[in-house]
Image: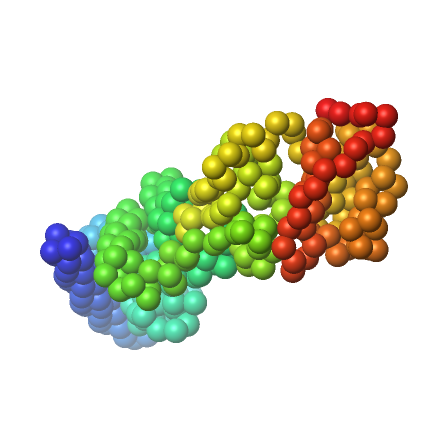
Length: 125
Length: 229
C-alpha cells in the first residue's frame, strides 16, 4: 500500500510540475511572440517595416517553435508558421496593406493560443 | 497537458461505468477497471507513436494519468469494501437450489443459452447436476456440482424451450414432434410455452423443466417408439 501511495504521489507531483511548467512556458513564449508581432505591426502601419524586421520575428519564432512543439500539437504550430511566412514575404515586397491583416491574424493567434490549452469546460469537451 | 489528464480521467470513468453496465458477458478474467485500462493503454500509446503531429508528451502524460487512476482504483478496491462492489461488481448466483435465477441472468445481460454454454464449458451438461452456479465479478464462471452429478449426466440434454420459445433445431435433433413437448407441458399444467423459462430433454427421457419465477422439476418420460440419443 505504501508503495502504491508513493507511486501515486510521485506521478501526481511529476504531472503537476509538468502542467505548471507547460502553462508558464507556453504563456510566456506567446507573450514574447505577441510583443514582437505588435512591434512589427506598428512599423507596418507606419510603412517603416522591412525584410530584416519581419525576418527577425520569424527567426525568433522558429527558435521558440523548436521547444513549443514538445508541448503543442505540431499542426497548431504550423498554422503560425504559414501565416508568418506569408507576412515576411509581403513586408519584404512592401505590400503593407496586404501584410496588416496577416499580422492581425498572428496577433490574434498569439493571444488566443494559450487559452486553447487551459482546462476550461469548452476545451475539455 | 492538463487537458490531456482531465480528458483521460473522464474517458476512464465513462468506460468503467459502461463496462459495469454491460455486465459479465463483456468481461473475461479481468476486473472491469483492468479491462478499461487495457483498452485505453493500447490506444493512448499508439496514437502519438503513429501520428507525428501529436507531441509524444501527450502519450506519456495520458499513460501516466492512467497509471495514477489504476493505482488509485486498486487501492479503493482493496481498502474500501463498499466501493469494491461498485468498481468491480459482485458475483451473480445464477443457479441455486430452486434452479435458474432469471433475474440475475437478465441483470447481467445473459440468457439461458449463455448459461448452458458456460455450464458445458465447465464440464456440466445437465442443469440438475448443479447445486449452485455463479458468474464471478470478473466474468468467469464457477459451479458447485451435486455429489452424484456424474450419474445425472449420462446423455446430452437438448434445450427444447428457451425463455418461452421452442427451439426447432433441437426438436429436430430429438427426432420427436413439437406436439409431443406441447402435450408434455400440458401434462404439467402449463398451457403456454411462454411461461417456461427452460425445458431440456436428454436421450434417456429425463426432462428438466422450470417455469418462470418457479422452482425447477425433473421427471422421466418415455419417448415414442423407444427413441433415444
